[in-house]
Image (cartoon, rainbow, N blue to C red; front, side, top):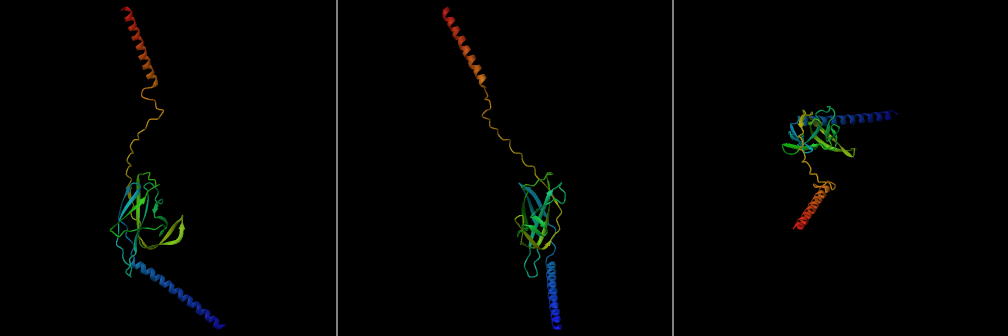
Length: 223
């Protein structure tokens, strides 16, 4: 009985030791990530409306490599709304789920100094004629999960995110007025000279001819 109790105790001690090692390892990896990836800076960007899209140009920030020499990726996420809409009612691109998870992947930064992203405004309404837009930067790595919502894959992210940038206010340019369409006359549109007018003219001509004929007859009789 004592041997069974001692064996059981040893097993418990072993399980506890393995659990502690796992926790320490996880904390070590987390601490390493915290040390190698600094918090991204708030992004500098410009934006304008082009046709039915919101075109955003962002100045890329330098990315610090991991201790093993590899580099994390730089991503962007956007949110925008009408200037008169309440603060909480944003449209997100990619669609916001629970940060840092999203429907679909984040917008990956280009390899150049600037990244340009075109955000669709199709179906969006901006009664005030002004759009408020903000950008958030993410440094790390994203990967697809096995979860799906609304037939879209949910992506997870490991890394660090910046704060939301200060909002920029983009004025939507007034759309140019379309040319006035040319209206083709209907088949039933009255002609320039109505039939009645033409008939009156014909009658007048006939009467004039009759009068001339009678006058000619009188002249011939006198002669």
